[in-house]
Image (cartoon, rainbow, N blue to C red; front, side, top):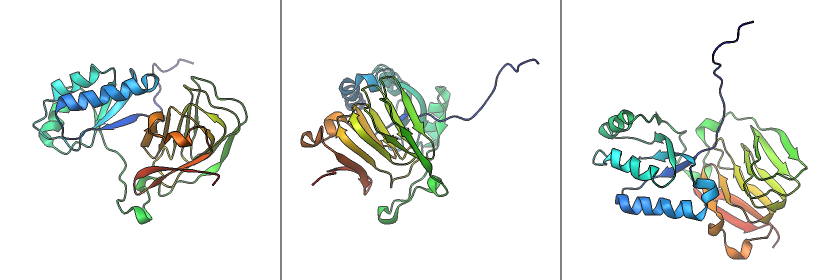
Length: 230
């Protein structure tokens, strides 16, 4: 049987989205450089999506994209473009423009539209340590880790994430956009935590909660962290 030269299939990847505000290019690049310096293992040479919803046709896209590339990031796509002139500049540079899922802005009863019919299947249980470089994705499921998670490891789940050992890697709950998902951890000291795209790096977590048992969740579109044991 002759094999086809290529096969095309769907897949899932977790990418960081950088939301760009209408600020001087120098300030934007400086802010990106600081983030890369804070977490080089996470951001150095990382593929990212740039959200340009706050930019207009006055943006010099060629200089802008070159400056971002010089920070060590690799822009793989652009989202949020609302200006037709800027859109043409982006497409001419060879980058695709993608659309993100829409979210209802009334957070008192907010649900992600793309998650409306998501059925969470039984939890995925991992009883062994998650080592640096390992990546676990619990598609349409909760993820439960009973052992430790090393720095450089990544946990991704469409549902909640529970970690009962030491957490030093990255945990991304609500990966498909569910803002009601949460992260529960018995010992928190992560490189990154994220829920439905909102994320914190290690230095954004209150010092008094590092190494403690915590619950991380979204409220009114912002991340919150509280002790599990009062």
